[in-house]
Length: 264
Image (cartoon, rainbow, N blue to C red; front, side, top):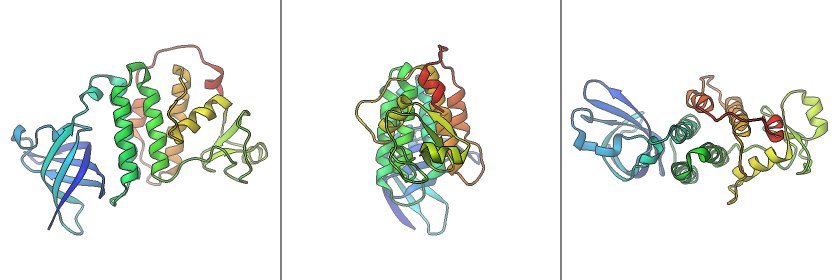
């Protein structure tokens, strides 16, 4: 049994037996891990804020080779992110980010996606309530890129010809990105994206400092595009419940913009 010390974020937790809880952690050096917090429900002092969703700190756990559930020894929280629970839009976006990592990340060292997750949760936590959805979309697409399956946005995903930035293009989930006009006709399926929607995706995937503003209808359309893209690349067939809740969470009504019609 080896003692593992690593930076970690709580992504999910649930009760186990009468007095304990199981935590699903994103860790910097060991990917996603499940740990058992023994007696956590009996004593609030033992693990304190470590049981809170999206808490970040240094976790210590005893790992057994060949086991999927390890024993948590301690969790020293240095960032609680209470702001995520103070607003429904922020919490829904953060839950969707956590679900993305839980479904796609592996149990091995991947500091790039861990740092991307940290930045994404921080951006959502400080976003104005009306901007939390856009911050969540930006974080999700950057996580997709960090996890290794970013969509093709500047060249056709099929024939690899360059795509003019100022023209609409068809987004194909099976192909893994945008298609040129010829390949789009051959594919026959997909969603047409206007130049504004393409620019938003490019900014998010490329982690550009200046992000495009989104009206409510465009934001919902982009959420749908992201969810469909993730489902295409998942193989277990299970629904993305947090993403569905995020997509269905309260969104101010407004007239559809031209970008929203052509975004997903």
